[in-house]
Amino acid sequence: MDEKKKHPALILMFGATGDLAKRKLYPALYQLYKKNDNFAVIGLARRPHTNLSFRELVGHSLSTEEAQIGAFLERFYYQSLDIEKPESFLALKELSDKLDVRYDLGGNRIFYLSLAPRFFAPAAQNIKKSGLTETSGWKHLIIEKPFGHDLTSAAALNDQLLQVFDEKEIYRIDHYLGKEMIQNIEALRFANPIFESVWNHRHISNVQITSSEMIGVGERASYYDQTGALLDMVQNHIMQMVALTAMEPPSRFDTEDIRDEKVKVFKSIRPISGHDIVNQVVKGQYIGGILPDGTEVRSYRNEENIKAESTTETYVAARFYIDNYRWSGVPFYIRTGKRMAAKSTQIVIQFKDIPQNPYFYHFEAVMPNLLVIHVQPDEGLSLKLNVKNFDQADSTIPISMNFCNNSKDANYNSDAYERLLSDCLKGDSTNFTRWDEVAYSWSLMDSIVAAWKEEHVPLDFYEAGSMGPSSADRLLARDGFHWWPLSETDPPIRA
Ligand code: NAP
Image 1 (cartoon, rainbow, N blue to C red):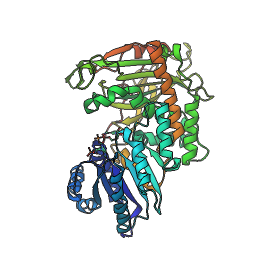
Image 2: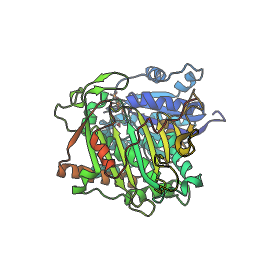
Image 3: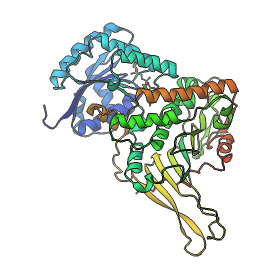
Image 4: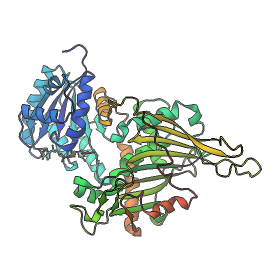
């Protein structure tokens, strides 16, 4: 074995011919290979492939002609397998054992389930029955989203997985946790006393988390119509951003302590009960409209494979309160949707206004200080401050101090999947979700879904190319706030 190679493991890639594998996982593995991670991959799916034709498929998913690509592709093997036919797992054990020896992988195995959710449990059961988990090294299961569709189904899935893997061996992917600026929240908060000392209800008036997309439902239409924005985006990505923004500093920066602190946030979120729902959650669906680039797009109900009378929400906005000492009375507003005016994920921390004293200074029009964490597409931070207006002694103008992370290396920024795969190879599950985080988040979503059903919350329509229905503006206006327009939160400037 090459002396420099590290983190040996055999990766059993279920769903190896699928969209996620081609678009994200193979490019991520290539980057890890270049960083000298020592793995071999067995691609698994039903359609027939030879090792050679599978290597071609993997090669086509990479946008590179670098010299190393041949050596990288040689580590890919293929076996046709149907999850629903346990007998097709038998030959897999033999091939796995052989590759283990050939590449000196120490018996370490990653089972990556890049499959439709209905296959997660049967895949795990068949992995066990075929003896693949009986290995001399470690075994990790990476499981894609969605992890259930409510608390009951998630708990049932979890129970089935626990028959094969321990909790510490289960790596539930939330790819937002692999994003650079999401990982940066901890450093920003806990390595900068100037922020941590004001990170509470005394100084922060509200927090706004936006994750907007310009795309519609595309090829995911049938899945999306049964799921909606609440379960597709809020249950996982948005709730994780809430938890990281709100959590207490862990006593130690290790995996379980960090996860414990996130769980405490979930436990402290005020449940949204029946009659409150109308004032707390907005449900929207897009109608036709024009995107900022001039493209005219049709309504959700006119999309292919969407029912004409569908009431599935393509937009959600909500207000959460975290009932603990730090966040008492501070609203956390979240919104996410499709066919919105911009693709943007950002967290805006709005600080409290200066004291209102007319004799103090002519500061009537002072903008609040904002700290903006730009998650995507731009990655960085901006801090909005006020300075004296250069021409007028008695008024201020807002300025912005920016840090742009993704302009540092224009050629390559590591991707979320690369970071998460790398963590899994190293056995670090900090940036994967633990079962109790998932369970608390589902329980909150379940209460919203139940309240939606009981209270007949109206479905508010919004034009494609807008930032959502006007009811979402009223959600904040009732508290004396407004959504910060993306134009005012200044994405950092690319170099
Ligand atoms: P996909 O394109 O539909 O791929 C599904 C894969 O599963 C294919 O390789 C398919 O190959 C294989 N498969 C289907 N039935 C099988 C069976 N009975 N036995 C063995 N293999 C079978 O799906 P995807 O978009 O890659 O998504 C995979 C997972 O990632 C899903 O859980 C999804 O929710 C999640 N995810 C995807 C994305 C994304 O951007 N695509 C993003 C986030 C999460 P054969 O037809 O040859 O069997």
